[in-house]
Amino acid sequence: MSIRKFMERFPDEQACRDYLFQVRWPRGFICTKCGESKYSYIKTRNLFECSYCKTQTSTTSNTIMHRTKLPLRYWLLTFYWVASGERCSARKISKTLKLNYRTALLLLYNVRLAMYKGEYDAYFAFWIPNEPQTPHIVKKAKLRLLKKAERFIRKHYRHISERRRESYFYEFRFRNNNQHDPSTAIDKLTMYCSTTIYSLNEYRIKRTIA
Image 1 (spheres, rainbow, N blue to C red):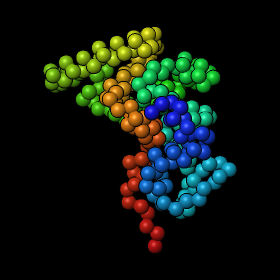
Image 2: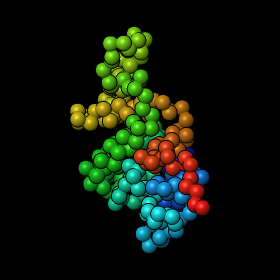
Image 3: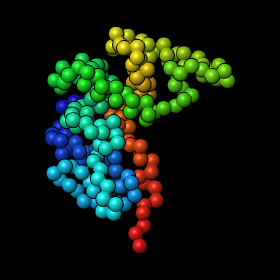
Image 4: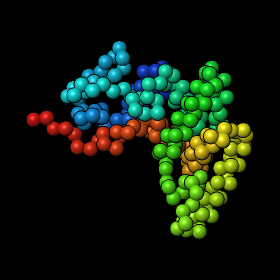
């Protein structure tokens, strides 16, 4: 999908909110506190209020976009750039979206963190030192991935902060795992970035009101 077609899906912030609602709650709203599905929408604040416990939630609360002051279109555009396989540096985002460089850097860091949480596999986290009992074949595979990741960083970013090097490994692994299907990769990354600490519980047993 071209970037033009992608952004045509999101002409304004409401379209972004509607899309993220479907990603976060594919089977309908579920209160993160009590599990109730009935809610009232507070249009002036873009919040969903649970009809049972009155907890107020937004589409981005407790996600990597929690309390963001950036337009949601900026986040979705970043998801697109990173997941589609294009080079996506903080400098590029800063220049294109006219953001402060440090803001763009933090934006990308949060997206990489979502990649890490979404696809974490301790067995093949190649940046983590091997345990004594790690099989030799796994050690070789991790070393091979580490070398590829270092080449990826040199090619796309050249100079990076050593403090943030591990987050670039997260990006490499996500790209490497999803390089053959960019469209699916965009959907996956959006889902990872919309995942909350409550997501695993949101669709368990709903509260039954007598």
